[in-house]
Length: 243
Image (cartoon, rainbow, N blue to C red; front, top):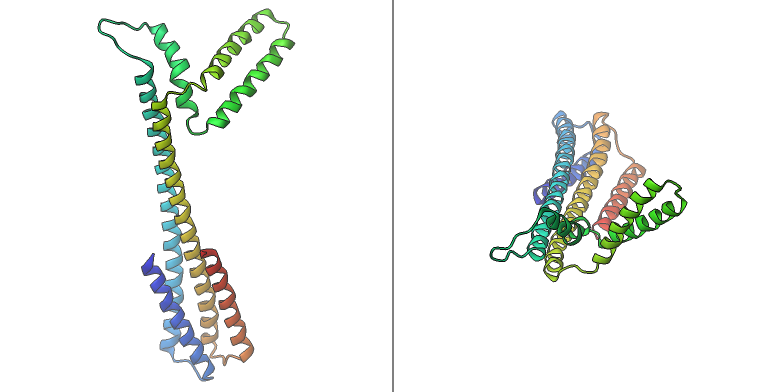
């Protein structure tokens, strides 16, 4: 990032040098014209490089966030299992018991650890919807099935406030890691957007200088003032964004 900013400082220097030559009102040497075109190509290459870097870092942070979520879900599931099931010597747990333990004491923590409020609201809404459907239903079989589902949802609702302390503590750490990763991704995105804005400004300025050099034009004070105003306004915009 620092090297890119140093390169752009060099581009500004060249642009100022080009403008100084234009004020001389003479035929621009071919070496300067060639250097100007090369500088414009360099800016294009830099813009493409920054765009590629931005895309790569965006994907990197997206993958890292997904990995934190996936690993977090597995860790929470493991912690919930350790809390919910204790193995005594010679003790046995049936398949039905395991299923009930999973539905009541493991699945809820795994499913909603990222957004507890949203998940709880979703359960409440599903309960209200089922209650309305049961009241309106005239099909005994369908009504019985919905009542069974409603019972499961009410049990889940009752268990939502019984999260084990061990699971809460682990969940807090994972959520902190996820928050840090999202903050880092946001800061990286902001920095690269500022860098791209700077490159765009250099490109616009250099394109104007190159066009003037190509036709050996003596720059008027009005044109010079317009270019200065363009640079000043754009630079202030970029600096404001950096704050």
